[in-house]
Length: 310
Image (cartoon, rainbow, N blue to C red; front, side, top):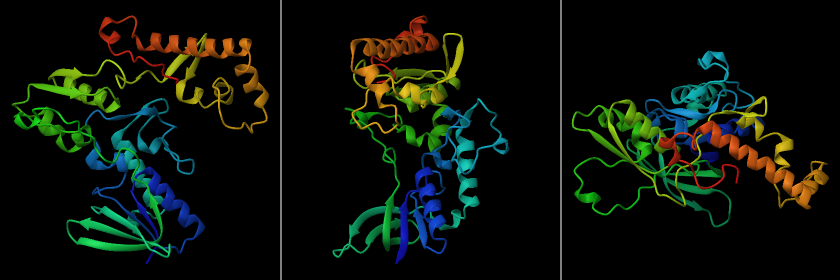
């Protein structure tokens, strides 16, 4: 009977394991992952050329394990996918987690015991086959992006080319972009991974057909990490975490900051609403300017229909 079983060896699963071991070093903690390497979305088989995070160094690391200069990323630079994998591997090694991960192990069923004392997990592994694992506590850390979603495309069965999900780019990128018979690559979707796929295909000289619905879940916002508020340069990721900025948004939850009066002032009267709406309108305008959506006709079609802050 395993004390604590964690499904998923990505950032959340690794952090959970490390935290449990801090409280009880002698606990039997194990992690399961369907990949052959740890990291979750940053596992080695998930990485593809030109893959970078949306974030700059300093916002992707744990508070107790700094992503410092040894990982080769300077302050103010985006973190490459290979560095994220190396960082998570170093984190796992630092806190004695690597040996606790059972790789290539997929959970196919979970059942709780009738008396509520523990769980039984049915797992499959290419080498060991089907196995039942028992645990007292269970943590599911598979995230929301672990299962690829492929649309049902009419006529896909008659298509001679290869159809793959963006999550497969890491394993199929060479065959895709280096294949001598591949001249045109169609990318369906307007999310961050679609931008990556388009960039990867275009950077290797392929013709790209990018297909995005016009409304609803159309193109997502992709903008530079910095903007200007008047004469001041602001780091967007840090800007939205500042308390004064958070007060610019209404909130249905109780405010225990001690400054509830400020939020009320900004959202419960005409003057306050004018101030908060003007603030977001200016930020929106600055974002459009930074991205060039309104100044470059080639980018105009990629402007999302919704505000980036709502």
